[in-house]
Image (tube, rainbow, N blue to C red):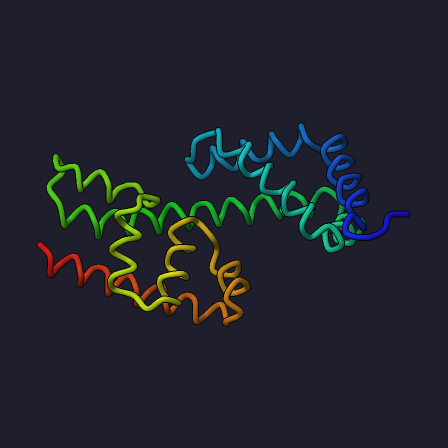
Length: 180
């Protein structure tokens, strides 16, 4: 039996190890197939699996129950949901790319800075035009967090996160339009 801050750690690791040993090859093939169907790079299959194993560690009680009830089908559903999230992130980044790319000539250094969603220049713009809370939410969004994860971080409804992100994108577009 474990005690203190390490309580639950062996159970978490045991569940991840068990699922890895029993299903990793099949899950990897399934993730690869999802990548092919979604026209994503096949290297994302490894990312999907890494994220799945990480989620099992974080939410091991839920995974243990669902896995016991549904088996590998539950794991397939989790991978499918992660692929859907990945596709949404790519679409969102493409929309951000459209906003920023229209503001700068393709040959300029600023164009390439704006194409990278993680650059400090983007965060500087965000910080200038958004409130402190909205900046923090938008920064989390640009860094790839899901609306649900952001809502948990800030203890606000998921729909509010979506509204804040939508309004922030408009403010950013207006700000960049004024600068050109």
